[in-house]
Image (cartoon, rainbow, N blue to C red; front, side, top):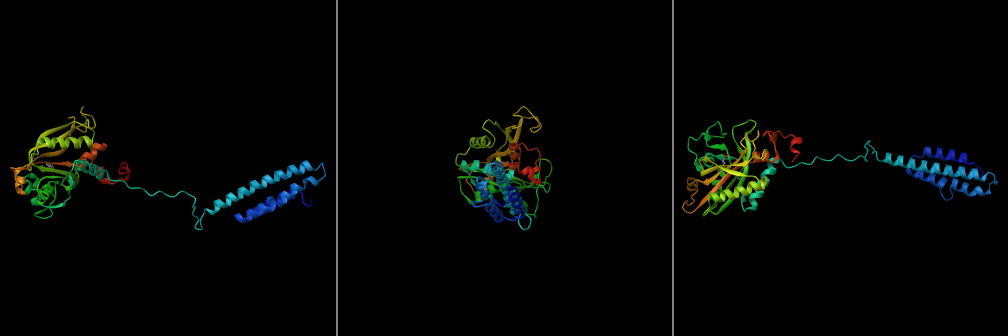
Length: 335
Ligand code: PHE
């Protein structure tokens, strides 16, 4: 045996210190630990040593073998990790940054949900212009010439005759002009009013509903709206129909639901009344039918209009309407 094991140990480690890639590490492994490797040979030759030297030489050689195997494995690991740093110095082993996933705006969600509920009951969905004529927004809907809603205070005027629609009700006229009864439709969309505070934004969303046929009664209106409220909130939600006034419906009713926050015992949201107003409704006024050429002796119908933001606020317990339009992703991401 020409070299003693301590010397072999030293040489192997200095070879390893110079190794710069996986190939040179493999070569060292073969050179020392391979079938014909230096350490392997050394172990094989232990038996030819004088008897008294054998135990110590064998033990030492096995230790060196182990130390070298470990050092080779460590060096390989280190080189592999270095290879994950690209030429530009980017660590390609780091997990990537997840792209932010968008979500539907709560107003869109609620709007879709309203549309789905009415679709299931056989209502068609119709959309129409946001810039409207005075005729469709007011005149055809039986608004008297001096009605306060026609005032600049409430309505955005584009010109003397053109306005931004103040409600989705003009869609009643547009659809009835196009189609003869029976008619069952909803019209979702943006509406505009010159108003801005905690409970009003100058633009908001409504969903209009209209059903016309022979023998449509106030009972049908109550039935359809009850199903709607039960599906939108839950089937324990009570409703009440409160007499009201709209120029285009007669009789008219506003619909309240039992306060979803306090369940009727009275709280800040319902101003201690236990009820929350969620929509306007009524039987289509005969003057409106006459404006679209429907035979009032043959047909009756009901209409309703609901504020989408209001329903979204109640459904999700949001207390400030303006939050919907701040577009703060921390708020919007919750839906
Ligand atoms: N257009 C009315 C509003 O904006 C709501 C309504 C629609 C009332 C249909 C009755 C029938 O307040």
